[in-house]
Length: 592
Image 1: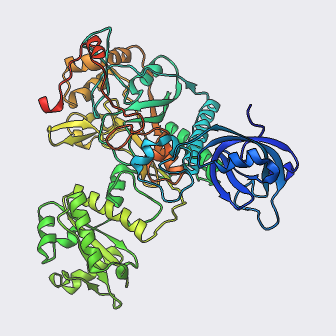
Image 2 (image 1 turned 120 degrees about the horizontal axis):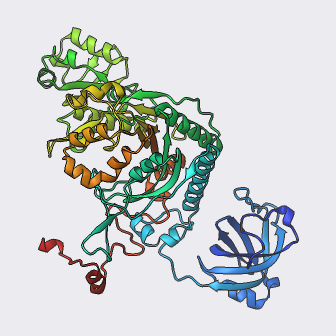
Image 3 (image 1 turned 90 degrees about the horizontal axis):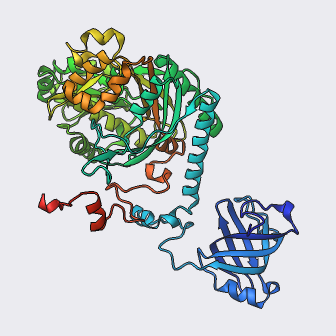
């Protein structure tokens, strides 16, 4: 080893020891007659002092050091002079007085330094990721990630799960997101697909008798990106046999409680609370509600139909919904200018036609430019329905059910942040259950699976599966943390007849189903046990437990929103020889 200690472990108990440290120059200060640097590695910082006692050669070499140079120092540990201690760092009581200095590598002038406060834009950080990863915040995030994954693996090993790796190169079975395709050189003109999840393989493992499977799995989806989504991601993949949904959720309850206790010192009450999908949409407008605060949606459609206000009445009479929220005590916090901006927000981002509002004045009356369209009795009913009190701010969206859900959900999140309705350090865990089996793809006018095509319907909904698929509910469950879907799972179909029915409802002919999933249909005939599972998004899990807002900050080498790696330049061109070996001809986008 080049070093005897790291830069984060020396204390006043090390006084007098001769030590060897290696690391990066984090900062340097020339005080005239003495040079001070902070030497950094991933364990911390140590102050190193170069003085005339270090020798002329060492002092001269130290004077040429700059940020991010990699050096090795030999010196003795001494206590810092009185009044110069730094209580903010573990090594703040000591310094190393250098006797020997070796420059292991010089650094050219970096585009930014890990310790600077005003960081450049994300593109620069991703291009120079090797520098960005030296930042304490990035190292903390990746260390947290490592800890969480270890906790997960240890937990499932304690519960007799078997860690099984599944293939990365598989068959393309397009359903939902686009596959990433990999051309085969040996089988010219044919392709593998990178797995969107190990779903089919883990079901095969259940049929094979491995009744408790777990894997930290790499997954790939060619889809549009956002702050919390990446084209390649990591999930904790779990599957169990001879169970029902309560067994799966109970197993994850225990994992959540363990991680929350070990990482945050939180005592999570089990079982975790749960609500149905329908309840979540009715109360919060979303299937992953943030339950750290209230502000539930209120349906006022019946009252709206009594109003002379044309917008409300026409929507109510045409089968739409008029729903609202009460931002308690917020009347004075939102000016007309703020409300105009809020109105544009729901129109531009969620397709709402507009936003209606009332403020409850000191006399308990509803005040608004639209108040003249309501008689006093109706205004009183609305105030009572909304739980309005002096100082409250009531907002309403009148539109189709789906639009009211999206717009009010967006506003609720906005209010939660702006009105500081919750402690940002708080964590809330819950389940949403009984999702619809299917949702309608309006463009293609067909049913698509809300989770995936292998999800089992509730036993009581089997009889309406084909006659009324819209009403069929799935044995499905999502884990929600602070308003984010942290994982989702289902009980799987384990008989060929039901699986074939579901494929048919999704528009697959028996021939196409056999072509895509023949191996699964065959396996289901060979003694498939009842089984189910869940996948937890590790990237999102770490982001939530780390209190971060961007999933790229918990991934060592992430892609941009355009699925590009700015550091390596991927994706990139390949040479003609490689293309010929794969029997591939490139057609440029402008030639298509």
